[in-house]
Amino acid sequence: MRDCHRELSLWMEALGEQIRIDAAGNFRAVYPALELDAPRLLIGSHLDTVPNAGAYDGVLGAVLAVALLEELHGRRLPFAVEVVGFSEEEGIRFGTPFIGSRALVGRLDQGLLDLRDARGVSVRKAIEDFGLNPEKIPEAELERDTLGYLEFHIEQGPVLERLNLPLSAVEAIAGQSRLEFTFLGRANHAGTTPMHLRNDAIAGAAEWIGFVEHLAQSVPGLVATVGTIEAKPGATNVIAGETKLTLDVRHGSEEIRVRAVEDLIRQASEIAKRRGLSVRERTLLSQPAVAMNQFFVDEIEKAIVKTGCPAHRMVSGAGHDAMILAEKVPSAMIFLRTPGGISHDPAESVAREDVEKAIDCGLHLLDQLAASPEFYKRTNRA
Ligand code: GLV
Ligand code: MN
Ligand code: MN
Image (cartoon, rainbow, N blue to C red; front, side):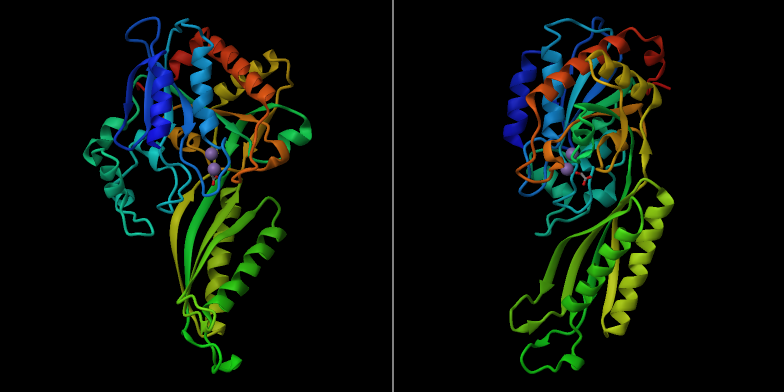
């Protein structure tokens, strides 16, 4: 992350001012406006990533923000542009995502600061260890003059490739739930314990995982994933006494997502009961679906058309910082086609021509916004 900040700082030093790392570890740098007290537009994405990741999820959006400003060749706009590189979006280390962007909307609270990673290090301690002061998190909040937030991001799915489209506006971001489940049984000898006298925490968890997949396959649009599993004591010749798993559930409809999570919790306790196990669950995230700002979505579509591509809008299945920023300021996203629809994997890629189109689209969009009286009405100043 330090290397990443250093690199972005070098690029932004040539363009901007007020380069800082806020107390939540977000990179922030301002490209000044024509006039001193002009409002600002935020453009960015996240700098963190998943284990064994690709190179573009998140980082591309931060780099694109800088590239867009470079393409202005010193031309000032009636509004400032603040480049943001969020510190923590994926939720890998502490189980809960959007830690960086929550600081901007005033939601990086004590509960989040107390979350601990696998080694017992809290968010608060991690911030201190990075050389930052958690007491100053309120200073990371959005300025009152913020006009909105724009995020370029790879689609991370196959839709645009299938449609042969390089770009799309994002009209909404699907809601997501993240939970941790722990099945507790009885650790015992794998050689001496007959099958009918076992309370095997892995076998119970495995039955439930099968149900998770089955449920998601039977509800249109629902996706549910058990992405991690950890068994204790963890030996070939020992029946597992404890199994911890994570669950990720998403759907565009709030009602369907919430009902699916309830079903899965109920099924986990029925399986546990039948097998003489116990199960407990902990909710790490319940993030409702979020609509993007209609004015921005329309303007993005117009800008896409100006690049010579057809207008298109879609729902994002992945979560994004834009869904957090949308709580406070008009927010929207521009997706870039993802070759093979592969993401969260080293094979993730993006086509150079699509990045060029995205920059072109971004330049049109900045000019459209600069000329739009409606844009200036939509500030966070109220
Ligand atoms: C972020 O990548 C997510 O999990 O949606
Ligand atoms: Mn991601
Ligand atoms: Mn991302």
